[in-house]
Image (cartoon, rainbow, N blue to C red; front, side, top):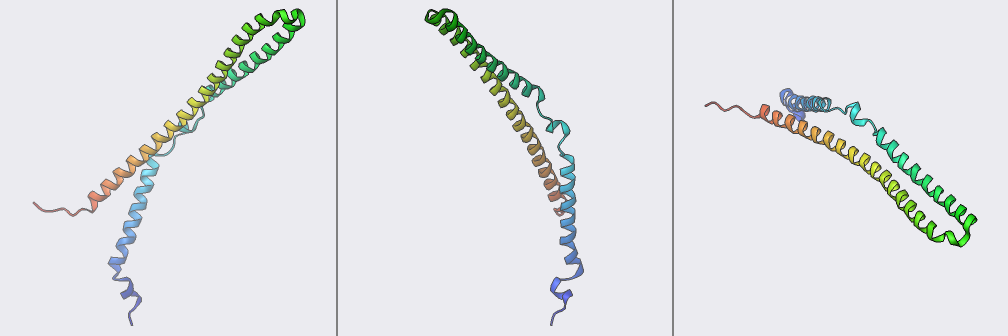
Length: 146
């Protein structure tokens, strides 16, 4: 019957994988610490959010102004105000649409900024991991005498 010592192998052989795993964990922890996420990477784009909200609020104000102008025009001049109201109304609608679109573009820029930040972080982590793996492979490679 074989003993526990014989099943696991000799003490030297059993300790080598444990030491190797411990060393790998330490290298991974060092690489992770080297590529930590900075507070600046997590800050939201406050200014762009305000611009987006401002553009959308102005667009809503223009739409309310259009409704008020149409109501006042029909109240004061009746159907005679229709050509003038169509011209002014179309300009206000186009401007409101452009402002609303500008707000959407600001939100899109925020999303792009988050994607760029995430890409930088992930690329840095991959590079650090690759470097630690490369150095680990060099450390384990046997040195051949010349």
